[in-house]
Length: 160
Image 1 (cartoon, one colour):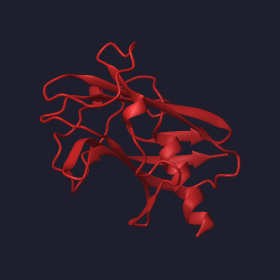
Image 2: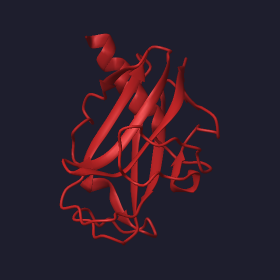
Image 3: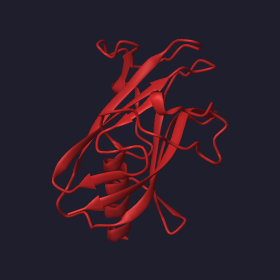
Image 4: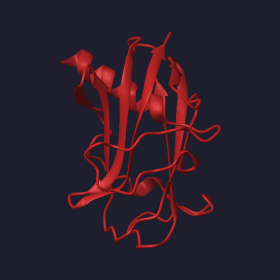
């Protein structure tokens, strides 16, 4: 159980950060509009796979344009290992509102999110040295009980 929690934490950690736009895939069960490569930027994530090095910090920026109002926004961050989704401990189900900025990314606006307005979600996580080296699929969704405002998946690898 502890190994699963560590793997999940690693998964979420690896998804974060920014450099150049990252190619992402839509989430299979999400009805949210698919995010494009220009909508997501993750550190150490070239077009094909995120390479996350232990004992570093990774960051993520995600452009969101909701098609309806969202009063709250929760994180659905999971690592998928051998087709088994493992919630990212400490982040799965937590509020994403403290990480919501205006379109410029300079002013923190939080929630609620208004339909048709563009927002930036910005966050970062440490990739701890205790994380095992593993290949996985990262699932990153933001939404409420009615659905997602944005969701993507991307392959990743944790390296020593």
